[in-house]
Each structure stands twice: as structure tokens, then as C-alpha cells.
Length: 462
Image: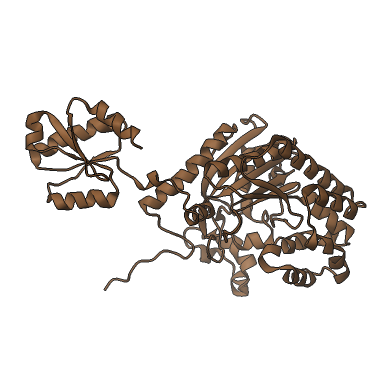
């Protein structure tokens, strides 16, 4: 007996209904990207390893899926390296490519390679899958789509404000009201590391701090101690763990804490400008919240950082995030090109909309009209009728065989088809077709030469 097939953990098959819901989210995001002036690009699913490695910190590098070289790659490894069983030295010799971890680093590579073709500031959006060798759990997959928007070549903080508006517009349009857009600034975190005497351990400090909402204060402090951050330094950072109040009140507390840090005060000033401008313009349904413990582990962020939380009561990780990177393209040789970008977590947004029952009912309908099949002659006439309805913009289909009527109606019911057309011998003689409303059971006749009239009635009913 053949073994039952399976798929790798952290990946999924998607049914037609699921694809329709995912496309609904993607189209909503895409519409707003284009409304805000972003242009689409696409990059390869895999990149050269040296494009990706070293760009995400040690934790990120470990989660990159490596692709084995083609051919007899083992024979090309020298005996010393092979016998050492050291993955760090062996991997570069057997793997030169890797699946992309995110869309931002490939975008930076794209900008450098196409810099002479791009008009700066360049606003791009990208909706493609990425891969991470992460531990699968609810809302966390090994293969998932990212929906990114970035601006490069502009230093203005108005871009950050625009991204706050963009998040607000998309989630409002999806009916996901009550989201929280958390904001912080890496310069503030750098300043804190400086004033507590842990400047040389900035990455370890921020990576640990970023886990506060996941593992709690005590575990974060334990991790900081393990990374070499002293107890006195952690004690000086204590105000971070209990900071509260309005954004203005927290900014005042930060000004006091960071008074001796030039970079920290710059970060406070930037946050103040972004938050006050966003408040001046106003948001539709989201809340903008200062969160001084927000760190985001990626090394390339240098300014404002964002993370979006689902409405209160929904147990889900972040459904969006991003930030400012002042010199991301510098890693590929193009210096001093500032950028800022955000990402929407498609899969997590899907789970949240599903949990809150926010998907439109119309997404469950994949066909507007199904024409039943009464035999060869009637079937040919029905196929011509269906072709006409498709030209009128309806999603129409013909049942392929003249099966029993009960079976054809059952198929229509399972597909959720709202209208079924009956075109039998008598209808052909009369020059009309009969339409049954599958919800009400009502039946009406229409002339074969009046397809446009019927199509408009169907469209008006949705």
C-alpha cells in the first residue's frame, strides 16, 4: 500500500475558499499601496547566500533555509573541512544560494543593482512568499507571504507618518478596527544602552528586550545577564519595564533618562515629531502607541520602528512591523541611501479576520450562475448561453455531463451558487431560459436574447 503523502511542517495547502479570502486581503493591501503611490516589483525566490547572510543577526542567520549546490557537491569539500563536522565552515562549500528570509534585504540588493534606472525617492511594494526555518506554531509558519512597502532616498519623517496612515487605512478597510500601532526608535535604545554602560552589548540588549511581551520581565533580565549585561546596568534600565502614561508623558520620562545621550535625545525628538504629526492629521480606527520596550531584533533598523498588534482580546503576535534603516544599501556598496518600510503579516491577518468573522459573505461564492446540462443539443445551447454570460461579466459555468438533476442541483448547492439556469428542450422551443434562485426557490423566465438584462439583475443582487 502506497504511503500517504504529506507536506513539510510549517507549510500549508490552501482550498479555493481560503485562496479567495487571502486574495481579498492581498487586493485590499495592494489597492492602498497603489493609492499611496507605491510601485510593484518582484525579486527571485532565492538569492546568493552572501546577499542574505549576516544581515539579520545571529538568530536570523540560523533561520535561513540554505539550498544545496547541484551535482556531486560533497566531492568538492576537502577532507579536513568534511571531517571537522563544523556546519559553519562546511555550509559555504556545499551551499551557495538560500531562500529569501524577507523582502527588505533583496529590495536593498535590487536598489543597488538598478540604481541608475530608479527615480529617487523610490516607493516600491512587493507581495511575495518568504521562508524561515522557524519552529511552527499558531500564526508562525515556515513559508508565508509578506506584503511590504518601502521608500528609499528620502530622509523626511513624513514618510513614517505616511506609513502610520497606511496601516490605519488598510486595517480600517478590512474592518479590523481597534488595532494598535506600536512605535519606538532604535536611537532611543542605543541611548539607553549608552547611559546604562552597555553600549558594546547593544544587539544583545535589544534582542532580549524585544522578547518582553513573550517571556516577561524576569526572563528578559535573566537573558541579559547571560549575555554579559551587568546587574547594575539592568537596574539603570528598570524605568523601561514600568514606563506608562500618554505618549507625551513617556517622552518626558525618556528626556530625563537620556539627558546625557546625544543619540538618545535625537531619537526622542524624532518620535515626538512623528507622533504629534500623526495626531494632527488623525487616524480612522487604529491607535498609535509609544512602546519603549519595542526593539525588533533585526540589525538594520536605525530609526523609528513599528509593530502592529491585533485588537484587544485576540491572541496573536504582531500582524505588521517595520522601521527606518539609514544605510541598508551600504551593505551592498551604495552608501548614504536612507529608507523606511513596513510589512503586513498576511497569514496572521487572515487568522484574525477569521476569528472575528470579518470576511465578506460574498467571498464564499465562486460562481454566480451554473447552467444545468439536459443532453447534447441542450448542452450546446447552454454552452453558448454561458459564453454570453461570461462576456457580460458574470462568473458562469455549465455542468459538464447530463447527470441526474438531483446530482446537478446538489453540486450547485455545495458550490454555493446563487442562481441555476435550466435550458431544456421546451425552453429552447420557447426561446427563453429559466432561472432558479437557490436561496428563495423562486423561478423566472428570460429571453435568450436578453442576457444583458439578466446579467444586470444578478450583479445588482450582490
